[in-house]
Length: 218
Image 1 (cartoon, one colour):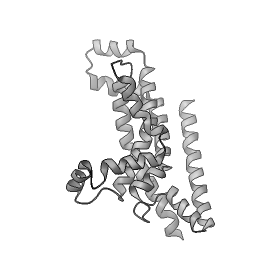
Image 2 (cartoon, rainbow, N blue to C red):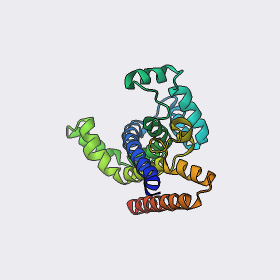
Image 3 (cartoon, rainbow, N blue to C red):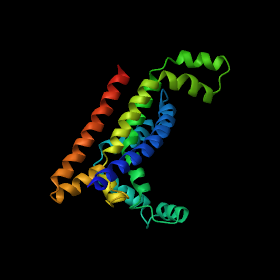
Image 4 (cartoon, rainbow, N blue to C red):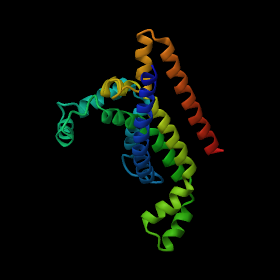
């Protein structure tokens, strides 16, 4: 039972960590790109970014299958690059977790960047700072609380992803079985003891994540 118990936890943390790094990079880039900027069609772009937040996970999983499945041009290209189908692999679980967690990071990063006094950034530009230096030494430090909060929430969201991961990555023990899918299987098979252990683990991890968010914002 020990191996069966720890395997989904290790895999969930690994997938959520990789997804968290990807989401952090994407969230910082697009959050900075969209902050304090108005252009025609911005509302449609932002709606697209936030759509995974409100779509049912099964719809997200279905769209991922359509986009990255073996019959799609993207899926065939990825299969040619990595020499194996993308679906039902750890990579698929990472993609699913990244897609559903991205809106949280994007919202937090964008709000953090928009809260920065533009006069501070303009003063740095006058002093000769290029955009990369400005971003790394001025914008990110000033928006750090919002960025850390978004990163923690994104990690927690990736850790708890179920529907899209189940559809796109499957439920292969030791390979793609995360805590949420393991709980579902344990409950379905009547193994309440194991299900309870995973449930308590998820509650504990989520509680710690929310505490971190609270202390970050305070």
